[in-house]
Image (cartoon, rainbow, N blue to C red; front, side, top):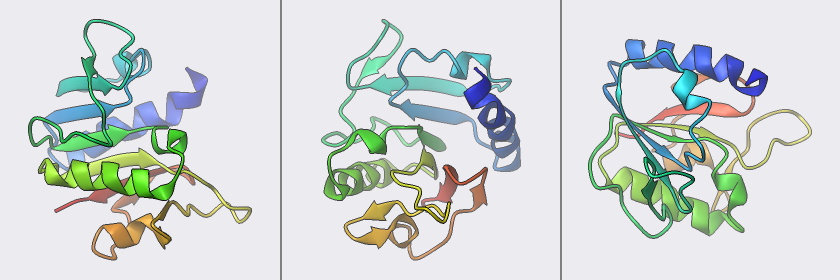
Length: 147
């Protein structure tokens, strides 16, 4: 739980600031740390291999979310993909769902400590209309506006 302490403090601030009411958590795992969040949102957990009956089986690379969530979280998901093209497909599927925001972790943090998530050879920021993240927690977590 110590590893997610900063994130658990950061997310409720974003929820309030951006009026987020619905959240999809791609790669939700056992949802343990999320259960400790102090937030009042409609939350759905998705995972390619669900840990429990509350998580929804979902392949983020090949499927589009069934509805437009205000926020899609993909915390430590893209680092499991074998190449940038798969990451790009997931991001495209998230955008196709009509989601407003994405909260995600990077694939690689270079020696400089700067986030450089590569999407088809380009920084992740270029995938979102050449914009920079709306908000940053640290060198791992970023919050992007998708629309």
